[in-house]
Image (cartoon, rainbow, N blue to C red; front, side):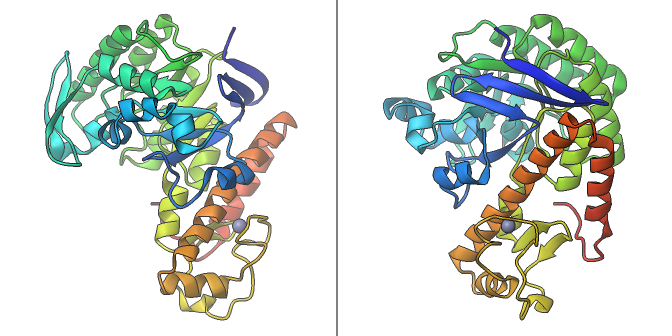
Length: 375
Ligand SMILES: [Zn+2]
């Protein structure tokens, strides 16, 4: 049975359902990031209440601390972290290749690097990345890929595409956890020809779904969205598409418009840690003195636990005093804002009104004079 049901389209935008061993996920879907088996400061019941349908866990971090065997001994990742909904695990590739000063060597067989935890040399192979994710028992496992940073010379991008395909071939038929789906990752950066080549090589391998990788790694936004358009269009329409690493409201709307079904980002919780709130008035920095006596909620339309009970003035006070509740309230709000945004996008797609909805949403987000640059 196919793991994805496409229910409606509006232009290139899609509404569907991802079917996993731990339940169905309506798409478009935003996946909060639980790097170390926790979405920072937010417990699983709260995540559920906010509207979270699927979480992301990081293979790299869980492999080193506390280790996949310990997690398996405690019943697998779902039981270990108290979340019984779907979980997608990344492959660790992004961490290995983005923490560049820890990289030792990389060839067709493996990548060798120093662990960020203790500096000890470590080695990831496609086989190990698959094994860790099988042991964790995630619902969606990602292939180990090569993700170069923005702006590398073309031969390096070409090599990333070649090796990513080679590794995907090795991972395709390895053992899986019960019901586990496996997604391949397309590469190629902003290079149209290489992106097309990556899809042409990976699509015939018939993975359950496909990710668009190697974007949102420091390049300009306009060419990134252009590459997303081509990358999404090159993927089979009957399979889910996952854009790795985007979570600002404008970016989420732009990738949904291009036919992306799933995305993840640490932005909501990272933004909270800087004392900022995502709102329909743009991004609010609660440290700003103008909020000192502001009796309004963070966002007038939001129904999250922060907005229904607390004022901007109070949350500003908590942030300035570095009280943990301030961080928690901002995390709850920012997650809710993005999860609500995605629900609204889905409704617009179902109603055939996505282009007017997205134009209006982007205009509202752009309107506010205090909007701060994206993280
Ligand atoms: Zn709120």
